[in-house]
Length: 315
Image (cartoon, rainbow, N blue to C red):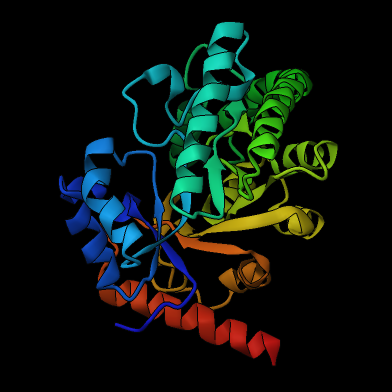
């Protein structure tokens, strides 16, 4: 396999195939990666066999994904109100968990913690209902448009409140990191559900208001493509505006509203993903976040296409 250089690879690809951490990392190394992103399903037990690999320099850690290591608590999983909780105790706990993730990132020499900062809460999963309508009736159908407007009205009305809360929580974490002298970015990630935060403009607001601190945008390319398709924002237009705030990228492509596919290879479109090459090149941390069905040869082909095209961009 081709040496992937400074590019990193998320353990989300193979974590369900392994119970022993070392074996999971060895499989990723066989793909040609020298760096990994430890995702939120990595357990403390797995880390017992991964930590010696990090200490010996057998693998580098580019980033960890909050909440890290894994905790079995639905209140603080990846789809949660998290740093925007109304309940002060829960919000305090979310802040503590993010600080804990940063401690691990610092210990492992990682450059960033990837953060799902929160969402505008709904009583039920309106995103799931919208995606079902999108697939069955189309984006322009009356049923989709009506439910979309209902979602958007609530999201836009409550976004300022939750943006402010998330920002306040991130400020506490940033101050703690400064006191500790940690040089670790907090990458707030573009999300895959329409009620989740931040949108690109929400991320820009938070980053601007916390300028000078470690809070940056983690641009998840596939998620942003999905939100563009659903109608939440104009991805390509807004990407130009938020590019200066990007610290890291999750590299993957979507087929309609299905994500974590190998760019170019699975879509069979050799042009559209070119729109994201500048952002990938600009990002300090570049992480492939692919699903388990992606095969080593496909991952290799996708990487070759991306790096060849970026080299051509640079001239």
